Length: 79
Image 1 (cartoon, helix red, strand yellow):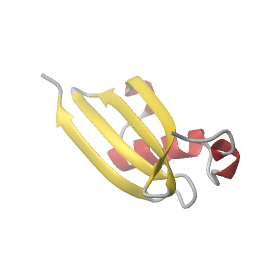
Image 2 (cartoon, rainbow, N blue to C red; image 1 turned 45 degrees about the horizontal axis):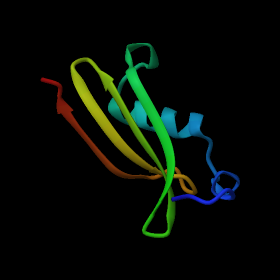
Image 3 (cartoon, rainbow, N blue to C red; image 1 turned 90 degrees about the vertical axis):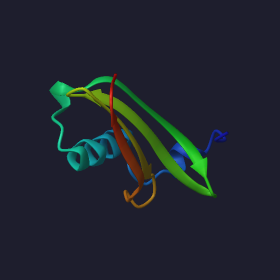
Image 4 (tube, rainbow, N blue to C red; image 1 turned 135 degrees about the vertical axis):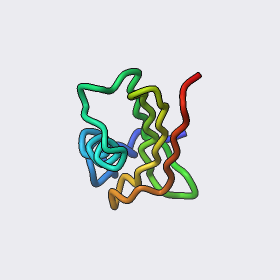
C-alpha cells in the first residue's frame, strides 16, 4: 500500500498517465466509461493502475509513474 509520500514522488500526473493509456489504446476520452486510476507500488516502482471500458472492450494498463512507460497492458471483449 502506498505511503503518504508516494503521490509527491510520482514524476507524471494522473492526467498524463491517463493520456498515455488512452493514446496507446487508440481511444478518445469521450468514448470511455468506468474509468479508474490508482497509484500503487509494484516491485518497488510507483505505478498508475488504469482501467476503463470503451467500444465493447475492457482495458487495463500499468503506467510507470516515474518514466511514463507502459509496463503492462491488456484488453478483452466485454460479455
